[in-house]
Length: 308
Ligand SMILES: Nc1ncnc2c1ncn2[C@@H]1O[C@H](COP(=O)(O)OP(=O)(O)OP(=O)(O)O)[C@@H](O)[C@H]1O
Ligand SMILES: [Mg+2]
Image (cartoon, rainbow, N blue to C red; front, side):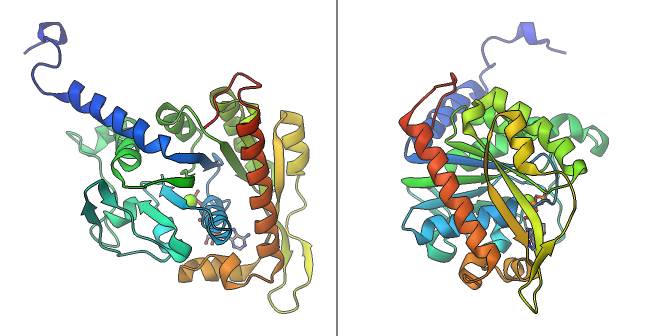
């Protein structure tokens, strides 16, 4: 069997050339995006995707050119939430054309590549038991392709919806060392804060504290019938957590059952029911996010981080 030391260069496979080409494509694509914004948590099910789809709709409604990359390869939900499930992918001269959701939001998701509803994503490995060894590497490669081979065109915002798992933050940062902001979503429970704090520490190290903004989702319950508002969890305060960790707090969003119903119909809640408390809260969070990215763009690298 040949050992690595017997191989000269990439042994004629062309892999090194392909990687260099792809990295160059990634840099060129991302240079046309003014603000890259990662939406993460570490914790699952706290509303990252619901927030992403609504942030995208508010920004697009204000006239921004917006793209959304669903970086959740195993549980993609943005194609559904933005109503483009089943859209056919076309190959254009500049790469794969992302389908457009409401307000011209460009969407790319693993969901658009999966053959049928129940098929899970499988990574090739000699046996299923070994596949975990490959998963991290292959996920990073797939994300690099989604970023570099999609014809995003010039964008004001590219929102990247991350899957749960603290390690996902470092995978994305290896591809995007520059972000305009990293939005960290939590719910007001100790269980959520436990994981979210770890993600905040990691994101601070990777992108700098000034990139981070915490959003508290499911902060209160809004009654679907009477519109009255009351507490949902009596847990710890996420604004206080953000303050302790030295990062910005972008606002709170209440739990409104109809928000989930709108997401199921593929319509962002801010469009479906713009007069509701949650829609107003989502617009306020978007304004705070805009202020964060603009502040950082105007005052680059105060904490040694790179702004992008
Ligand atoms: N404020 C809210 N009010 C009502 N429903 C909500 C709210 N936020 C999220 N949801 C709903 O809760 C469910 C979970 O939200 P979502 O899928 O956005 O979480 P996630 O953090 O992206 O999950 P995952 O970790 O699996 O990616 C969805 O059905 C979503 O529509
Ligand atoms: Mg999600």
